Length: 340
Image 1 (cartoon, rainbow, N blue to C red):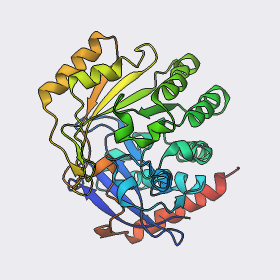
Image 2 (tube, rainbow, N blue to C red):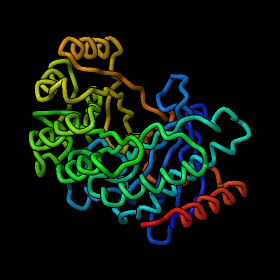
Image 3 (cartoon, helix red, strand yellow):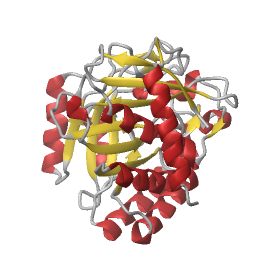
Image 4 (cartoon, rainbow, N blue to C red):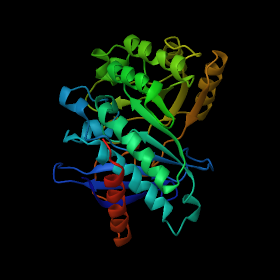
């Protein structure tokens, strides 16, 4: 089982906390993160949590890691997490919010769990689905309201198919799909997994979700501006023309869009800030095509948290005695409600 080691404050704690977990099986720290509001700059009644599914990312072992991902490029793959280790991150983060005496407003917010930390959830779906239901049982015991879970993937059709089957008769709380698309004709350059699972095949699987759940899956489009991956010899920008090309592949009746700024990391390459005026233009165009669309600012800009994580770095602060006690509580709850 994972053990809490320490943490980092994101923007001095104004945005959230990055947790570092240790385990004798893994050489590097596992990471998860908690945000007092699920969207940056918005005062919501929903806490957001980002959870890891593995140590590093399995895509690295295949030479197919996404070029913009700090986890895939900076960390070796150490192995998959079990459903109990995935659920433990969720439970512990909620407990620390519930018992946070400095921020009493966190105690009874709704909870949103996004499986977007270290690892490709599409290759861990068998464990993620169990972790979701274990988390749901414990949240019910704690009197906590689950807003939703977000199953994220760079595009593994078999996992999307399994997820769509589970939507029919398995999940007890809302679980939505986030497909990290980011590019179309040049997608294989940024995301080599596209050479294994071509975009058309993935979109075909994504398009079945709305018919089952009447909930539009989210399509993620990172706002790269002159992104130059280290050692790759090309530059990519999600210009208006490139985004138009992406949207032509999608059906506004079957999905919604999420445009998110990219935090560049020196280890991965260089990129420039995306102009705010151009973000407005992208949204306006998406609206004219009939899409539901939003833009999001990334958390942890100060610490250059590419893809939300810090590349397994040593935590700045150590876990307190109180946190060790909360970790024991999390372990006890998992033992009590693990029926799988």
